[in-house]
Length: 245
Image 1 (cartoon, rainbow, N blue to C red):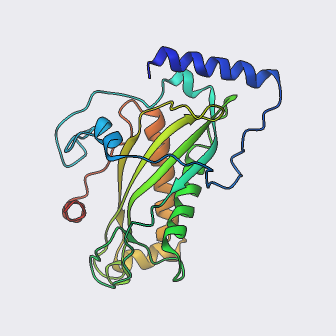
Image 2: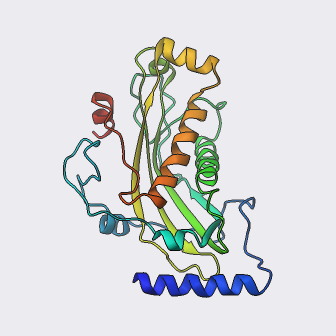
């Protein structure tokens, strides 16, 4: 979408919002959308070149052109009124207690149960926290689809540690028309995962895996929407490379 068209659309939306009450769903509404966006591989390939990175902090040195998901002037006009999180049932859950379990979802800090639903709630709450600072008059929808949510097994958590590897796709839409306001993007977000005594000490201070991952994801979405280069994934060495195999 051309940026001038987007700016006009949001300007009209702002004018309409000032004229009367809106029945757009609020942030506290259930995040399941009646018709959630389905991201195709073609969507992702259009905006994420294989091996491309945004900064020298990542494992690759190839550069991308600076960008923001929306210009600052438009960001000041929006509020994220609805967040839809999709965790496809096709994502494989692993409960294996190995140093590096296979599967797309590895999550142990909630009781045994529906891991897809647990991951969905973590993602939704983190996205809500990360977008809470957008308080403009024009409501938008944030659609998120989880690709991978790989925390630590018990064995890795209390020995060597590793990397929390979380991959998701996102797009912004107009809350009234459903029109895309951004291209779909694929985001890889890695966070150092504590192990051994470091993990035990962190838990004693209330820094559980869920607390750290949630705070990290909130900052990821904030940076992705506001920083010129988007979110800058950290370079975390060997364990990060293993996650990419």
